[in-house]
Length: 71
Image (cartoon, rainbow, N blue to C red; front, side, top):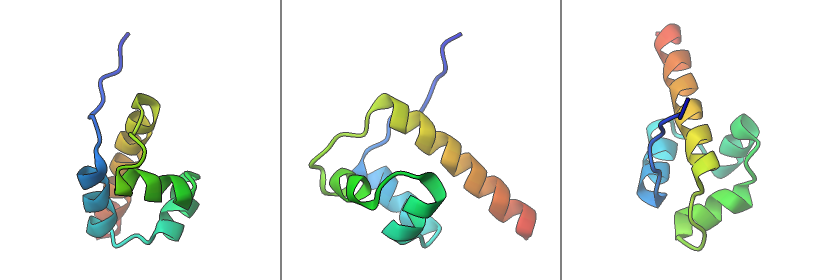
């Protein structure tokens, strides 16, 4: 079985952080992805690999579920 995932870029990532008002440190706490890696992605110095894209899809779904259930 092949898992399909969205191809993330720095604009998608910036929108995710803005949508949930997450700082780089909060993102690191929630995901375990170092803030330094996040900054490299956002600056375009590093491309977001396919494993990270899959993780970001999953994280996004968990955030959506969390905020929907709280409302």
